[in-house]
Image 1 (cartoon, rainbow, N blue to C red):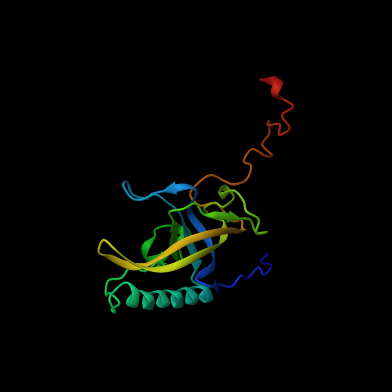
Image 2 (cartoon, rainbow, N blue to C red):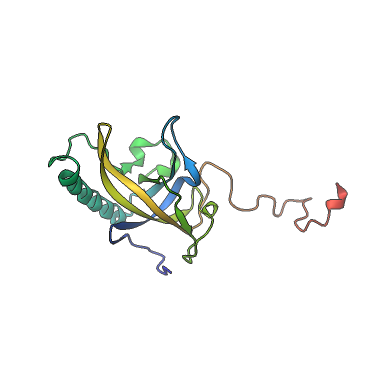
Length: 191
């Protein structure tokens, strides 16, 4: 179990472990953003710009993936036009959640294991858009259909902390403490 509240980005083997606020969470079922695209399990990871340690860590790992691509995918040359996973939320998103943040998306064609903060496997629905999580991912170079870049393969996701939901339903019980609603179900005969 990870005890440090200030989780630091880490690398173990070829896996990277990054703490981020999660958005566009699709862990229950595969999803495609565009019609006709391959459906995948995916999540967008938001990293505040003041988390310089995580951003520097990711930039370093992206450079390592570019070096791997140069030798293994791109014939000894790093392409001039290269799609990179780490992007600037202020420049690319008109969404308050991405303000003053960098972000990347990670995906998998296979179901992704999900864990609670105690590192016990949990239902994917425990992890929602807006919560904080730790993602296990692998950066990889690609060359597919003329598109070249660095992708982020999603391995696993661990719930880290609650936060306000983003763009969807609330996670708590909206009906708790509402006048006229009996949470014990004793007033069912009043129907």
